[in-house]
Image 1 (tube, one colour):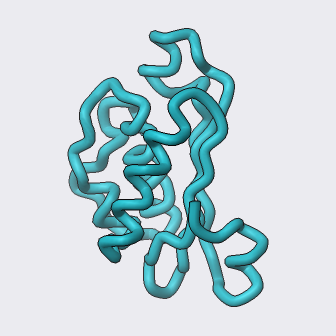
Image 2 (cartoon, one colour):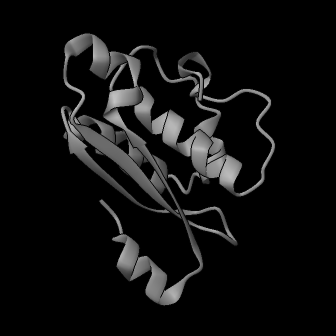
Length: 117
C-alpha cells in the first residue's frame, strides 16, 4: 500500500527498511518464513510513504500500516507502538524500528526489542 520505492524516489529522498519473515518469531513458529515486509520512508519528514508485504497475513500487516499512514504517524512513532508479540503485525514494528535506526534517531524502546532487532 502507498507508494512503490521507485515512485517515491522520483520525488523524495527515501530510506527503505526490510525485514524478512525468516527472522521473525511468529512466522518461524507457524512455519511460514517465506516473505518480507518493507517500509518506504521520507528521510526529511520521517513520513511513511509505502508499505509492501509479501507472504503470510500480508493484508493484516498492510492494514496496520494503512492506519499509521492515514493517521499521519511518522516511522519513529510507529516504532514506539507496543504491538502484540508474537504476531504477524509485529513485523511492522520491527521494520519501523529498523528504519528509525537508519535515520539515526534514538529509540529508548522499540517494537522489535523482543525479536532482538
